[in-house]
Length: 355
Image (cartoon, rainbow, N blue to C red; front, side, top):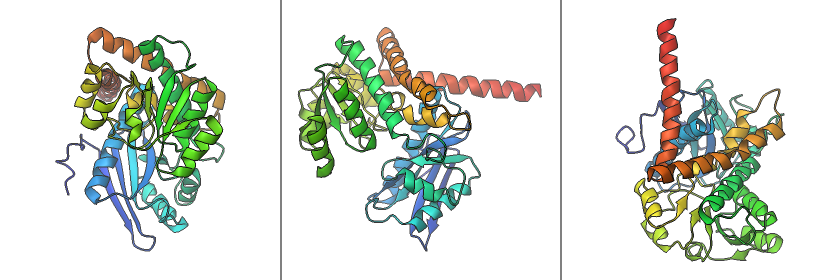
């Protein structure tokens, strides 16, 4: 097992391992960077094959949250947590109460929210043990999934506008991989906008629902990469854009909600060389963290969702700058995020010297 020498480490501030024998909790919390504020990130529950896989995942995800917050212009840092276990069979109230106690040990350095494998009710149980939980229904934003889907929808619109020169989505074919809360919500928005849907998900009930309610065409999990579509929208797990899948894609645009879609950084260039416009994942899927950043006594959903819709312009500016500089969209997104982080660090250093 490696941490400091892992390629995903990237100078994380904190990596904490928690075990509660009574509840069976095995969790890892990673805090990547708190330059902009306390680290906020979702809690993923997944049946990892081994501990190394869980560590790599939490490190990549927490780093992505730093860049996501920076690019979105919110004053939150980057963090993430993973619970090792089967989300369908291993959940108990005791497990999430123990997880809440783990979060509380960080004293607010990390704020947890829902993610793949966890739900708002799960985090409400964790809230019994800590106040450092966001995105729950207690007078705040509630489930951030609709906001994430809303942001992805607007980022996808920007990509279609830029690459296909279409100002609307009527007749645009979108192949959606993953029909969880965000993926299905995105499908609803796309259907209402006139898009044609092709969907794949390992859970048959989710696929049947999309076919029945949205008129989607169902294909196999592997076949989703081979579709004659305009857009591929990955809305499941990460690292799905790799040598094999990119070679199979027939689309002009990749725009979806999944985190860490690129298996390796070089795959951004592979997409570019193939003529596929890539909407950087942490740029397009920032809706959840944007709406959570509005939480508080003066929370106004309409105002928050208006900022989420601004992901359209954020993505469009990334596409335009990447074209001008003849580099990948992923490079430009990283540059913008790092520029803001560096500016804030410099300002903090200046104020410290002046005090």
